[in-house]
Structure formats: C-alpha cells, structure tokens
Image (cartoon, rainbow, N blue to C red; front, side, top):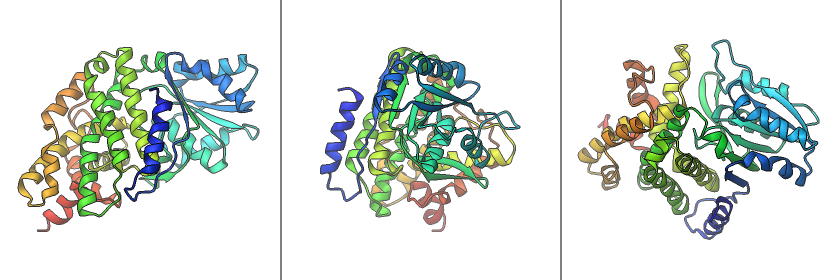
Length: 382
C-alpha cells in the first residue's frame, strides 16, 4: 500500500480502537516519490488555489524553493516568495521575531502557504497558518525530523521551548530527488530522531502503568514499525541511497502521523526529547549555534538508555523491565556513527554542566510521566 492507503487503513483502525484515547482522522495527501514537486500545480489548481505564498530560506531556496515557484508560475499561478532571513547570529530560530517576520511576509490575497524546508521553516509556517486561518502545504527538503505532519509547533517563547497547537499540512510533497541531495548531517539527524523512539515508546508504557496516562496501541504500533524500518535500512540510509532516504522519510511521516492520530506527541517524544529541548535552551542562553534537533535526540537517547537500564536493575517496579529490552547504548552509538551523526555531547558543543543540568531538570519541561521523571522525583528522593 502507498502512504495514502496506509493512512486510510490507520484511520479506520483508530476509529475502532477502544483504548479510551481520543482519535482524530488524519486528513492529508502524501506524495512520497521522485519528482513529487511536479504534482503541486495540479493539486493547487484542483482546489482552486490561484495565489500562494512560498516560504524558504537561503539553503532551501536553491534546494527546492526556486523550482516550486517556477513550476507554479509556469502553470499560471501567482506564487509570492518569502525568503526567511537569518538572525544576527546567522541562524533561523522558531521564536517570536521569526513568527512576526513570516506574518509580515504573507500577502493578504494569498490563499495558502507552502513551507519549503525542514523543521524550523515548517514550524513557523504551520503556526502562522493556524493564526491567519490559511491552508498549509509541506515540501520537505531533508529527511531530518518527524514533525512534517505534526499539528503542533515547537517554538522558543521567552527563551523557553514550548509546543503550541497549530495545523497539520493538507498535503506533503516529499520529493526524493530533492531529499536525497540534502547534507548527510540532515539525514543523520532524521535517523537520530527515529532512534529516540526506543526510549519514547518505553516511556509511554511506563507512563501508562505508573502515571495513568492514555495509551493507544494503534499509535504505538505505527511508531514501532516505523522505527524497525529505519533499523532494517540503516546501511542504505548511511550511504544516502535513494531507497534508504525513502525508507527514512516514510518512517518520519509515519511517526508524525502516529502523533497526529491521537493529537498528542506521546508515541514519539519521551525523556530523550525533554533532554534535547533543555540542551537547545541552554545552548541558546550561552549564545551558541543551534544543533539539529535529531542530532541532539540521538545522543540523548543513547545516554538515557544507560540510566534506564540501571533503573530496570535497581527498581522493584515491574514495568521498568521494558527498559531492559531496549538495545544497549553502544548499539545506538554504533548506528549513529554509521550514518554520520554525532555520538557524543562534546560533538554537540555541550559542556559537562549542560549535560548534568538537562538530566536533572529536563523532566520538568512537560507534564508527562517518564523514567527520567521517576529517577529525579522518586528514586533520588527515596
């Protein structure tokens, strides 16, 4: 089955699920193929969208943004361009200033917005679309993150990383001919984001048993199967081959859909993501250059595995046995190294103090039960 057929099947299964979790229909078209961008003009015309705003940056413009604009204009559509400027540090961060810039860059007559880029561009555009009530379309330029399908926008507001309700894309045009040209560091980041599902899924089981949090077997299985597919294709991903990039992008979209179907990030975000968010904030406060989200998640997951396996050995709580079934940290490090991603906190530019600060405080960033929360609030107290 192609992605759209699978989404239909997951929707049907979720609507029959008796887990008690609220389920939402995933209503989007996914074009995951070579030359997917070519489908954009016909898609827009069929929906009656005659004028759209295309958002890209200095890197994603040459990668795909310019081509998107040209194809739309060649088809007789009005394509307004907005190049997202870098901040004074030479970066693009999804913060208040960037939100205002995107808002100012949208023409009043624009009927929809197209995000051409990776995570940051998508988060800004999806949030702005939610605020001005315009449809949101996605053109990923790298298999770097699982948030392309998300309805939530992680933003830095007052120096704190928070996730705000936004809108998912109406359609995703994941052009493999574009994505396979992305820097390997971006692909490695997407792989690192997927490796984080080892601890996020285990944390979800723990939260169900000890925190009484809602649990959906459909969303769990979707994420688990996506993770397995990545491991099965690790060599092709490491070599940047078309089949590897396709498998990774497919997995990232599935992971995003699993969150969308229950309207919650629980399947794909646990203690490892909380640590990553804390590192991101601490790096920003220190005036350091941002690090790719998935790169931080992969390293955080490997470090967290050691502590979770120790928790499984020391605690008498039966549910913590789930942590002992996960791969060893050394295996995650080997996979990260294989695909060309960072494997140590030093490579991420983190100090020892930043690492310790994250492990001591990251559990406070979300109202969510995880092994990390247990270690800090129960085990250490006891």
